[in-house]
Amino acid sequence: MFLLFTFSLFGQNANTPASTAIKANFTSASVKAYQESATLKIEDYYQYLTLLSNESTTETLKTEIKSSIFRLFESEKVMVIDFTSTEKNTILLSDLIDKIANKNYTFTVSNYESSIVASDYWTTQYQLIVTQNKIPMEFQYFQKIVFKPIMKTFGSSKKEVWTLFLGEITLP
Image (tube, rainbow, N blue to C red; front, top):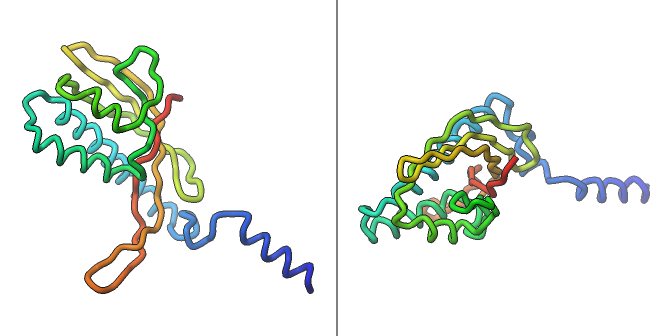
């Protein structure tokens, strides 16, 4: 009996709890719909970067845009690819935001492909075309998409709501 209890206890700690595992809470059709929704968040991110890099965008609006960008991500300390550099190293999202200010970049995102779902995330691959001074640069990126339950307050009640967040961006 003791042995059975020990295995049961350790077995439960070995993986992500079922209550927070994507596959335990959603059908494959639902996950596919959330993956499509995540591509819209990626597009929002690059639209925000376009506005942020536009020299005619007011400073007040840029402050709001930065806040909107950070709300898309799981963490403000997320690492992204520095497309402004020839080395294509990873940098903090906040550093990229500072680097592109008033540089007039435009972004086109296409060819999305999502990976197999892990316990609380999946990876979406996409093609990104970054244009500055009419010169396009093409990239293939992987973006981690985190999907997890978050406690939200609605008036005086609290409810667990599954939420999509953008995560780190890497090269293939």
